[in-house]
Image (cartoon, rainbow, N blue to C red; front, top):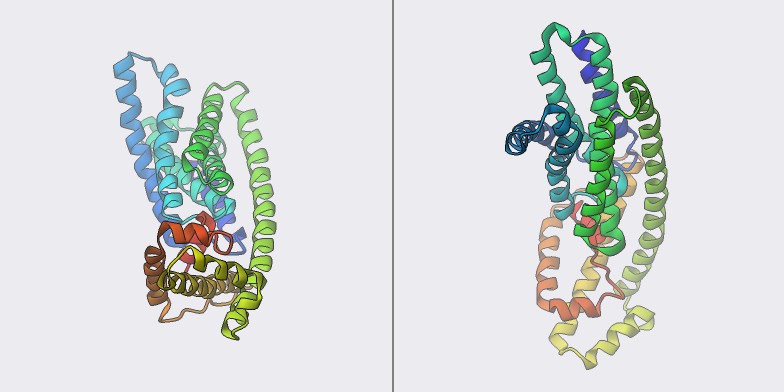
Length: 329
């Protein structure tokens, strides 16, 4: 019963975040993998903290305040970086949920270790402080790191810069928590009050941004693809721009660029359609030839080369979000 106070708060918090994701951006499979990584990260951090303590001849208090925040946040954040690099994360809210899932796994493993080693000394008060305070903190710091990381990727397309800034924030918050500047109960109260507010603001921002992005780009891409299918593309500004490229590229490359643009529009529309269906609670449409078309798009992108891709930038923005969108298919 006592251990439940150390487990249930962070699990319930994660479940609420997952259920509140109206666009269903988070994959249950990857969510479970994130939790598993959090458990692995806890084990790696345990040995890492002990090694640092032995190497620097540090006491438990110094390790807790200065070493553990660095070691633990770095290890927890590795998997989030992998998810972003593999374009499994598109917006702040799915980044935050995946991040909190990693922290959840970490907290579950850590609280289990405390329960097993302290035995009867793991009393109700300690369980409440660790369950509502420390556990939520572990999830919150990784979530904040993930939010800053993905926002940095969107704004400057530099994963390193976003990662460094996000990691510094996570380490500082973790270290401040371990310094017990306030009474543990006050710190716990602050965490369970402020963190839901942060997630609420992130949900609002992401939902509005995602809706605007879908509505504007979805309509524009449909109009563009319709003109291509009706043979009216040359009359558009995009068609006029593509026609000017014949002075800089051979005919075969120009045809590949045209096919790439047309196929990209088709796949992008289908990806956005599925996102809108998810938000409406309807099943997504799965087409058997999607994998072949994605492969064809990849081959066309390779054939037009970097020069052709740069020339198409005014028409096709192959940034992180666009690649994430196609990855949803």
